[in-house]
Length: 541
Image 1 (cartoon, rainbow, N blue to C red):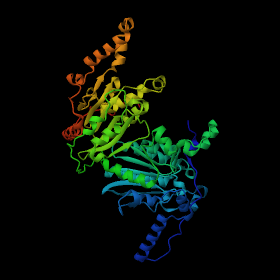
Image 2 (image 1 turned 30 degrees about the horizontal axis):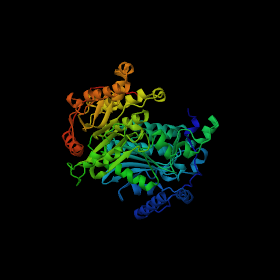
Image 3 (image 1 turned 90 degrees about the horizontal axis):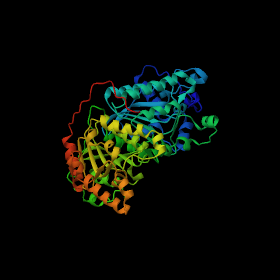
Image 4 (image 1 turned 30 degrees about the vertical axis):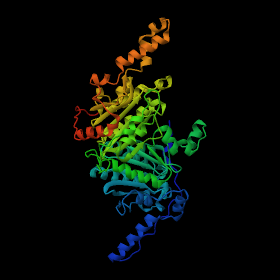
């Protein structure tokens, strides 16, 4: 439970206001030159000391960030002359232009995006009334234009000198994020501190990027935690990039520097449609759609309990071996990644046998559910690569809500209307098989490799239940057990059992996996799956 003080930003020294415009008469050229000087001062920073502090922290200024994010000379700024109207606690003497946030639009690879970037040099990037209204405006424009929205976050929270109006400004942002969810892609880039109520804005967006060493996110800071609980923790230990990448699951991607981070934001935009009425951008590729995948024949061990790296399968299937993974450091027993097949963007959900044998647990279920939901919202076809032994057993998992979190993934698949193709790479046991986009929950097509095992559970576990009395009473229990295991496998787990019952469309040659997927996705390109009329569903949140 947080305290109210968590929403208050600690602001740096007030920024000296710019000199008032000189009286230059009515000469338009002079007025224009005056406006250019003002813009120069805005971009370079009215306070050289704050710019120097930004550089000493290894951080770019907001305009430098925009230069790296957007196409050259494409940025169009709005409300650069906006100032706050507060007069409390010395604020009347400090009224810099922009009010600490730069907003507008530009292009990435020629496609329009809207962006706002907080300027930590001005009031620590804290959010006041005018600051919030600028963000509201650019969000409304993004909605009207049907274009992605990118937030470059580098602010300490609500501006305490402006009181409750600052908190109301956050409310307007939250409401707009919710309204635009699933309508346009929303990306949050964390390039500085983010505390208190401010953290809920990026948490509600589609993607969160963080840079190690300079970005932190937490509801209550170390000082408040120390005062309330007595715990001692640093800013980085509490809410640094590594924490959110590996433990909380907030950060979808983490980088060592801002340049790499902003470069990948550009790449992500290339994989997403501008809005939910469009399909993702399709590109030309020289990688043939019918390229063989002979390497896959030697990749997967025949024994169901032996591990392998599912990344190798994904990279073998996609165009040019290029995939973009989300949340690669969190819930690593499931892989969520974008790639292209024959130029078409695809979302991959795949078990990772190299981590926890690829089981589904709470974190993996939540991670995959959010990814499936996002792909469905933005018309990205789904390919699910299955090698799953089941859900992770254990008291801790059950008590922490495995049922509820597993239901999130099931609900996400059941309601997804995009093209959906399942490929069973090896084993698919129990409820986890059903959840991972089986035919019974709506997959358009299901394929399996010849080594597949689709069953309620593994043969050893099944025999321990079905024949436990017979095995216990036998003179040679182990021999009886082995005979029954072989019998069970031959009768109910052979590679063609699921196909014989219509639950798998075909058992395919692994070397033709890419070709099969390319043909299937091309056929499903114009898929239309109407849903029942309703206000909205009620999933297990």
